[in-house]
Image 1 (tube, rainbow, N blue to C red):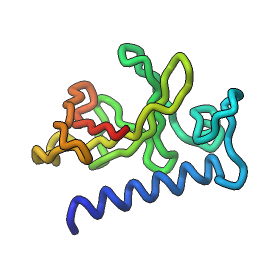
Image 2 (tube, helix red, strand yellow):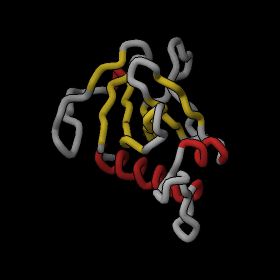
Image 3 (cartoon, helix red, strand yellow):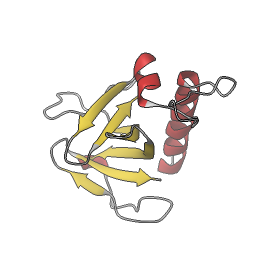
Image 4 (cartoon, rainbow, N blue to C red):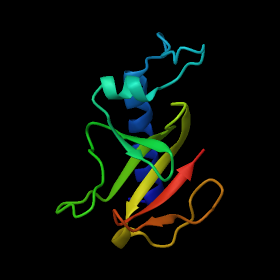
Length: 129
């Protein structure tokens, strides 16, 4: 099966999960009149959010997938996550991680920028704003 369709399915699953965490019929408010998924709402629905201090962000992973971590004896092939600003809790972007041994040099869609290697966890990261 082509990689693109796997990514598309992953994005559909992520959007469906975020809709469960923040249903369209009942907007999730940040307290400032903004709507959309929030880190607090995702955590309340079982997502795992990890704080990254150098980048000043939170990365939130679906409860069905867990999260990448150094030395994982059974690493998943890929992860999709939502990123939030650490100081404001604003949504920043959607990210995609692919395991180092599976990365084939493909560009990060849609801008065709290169993936960035995250050596600590052994994954290449693509950011979609």
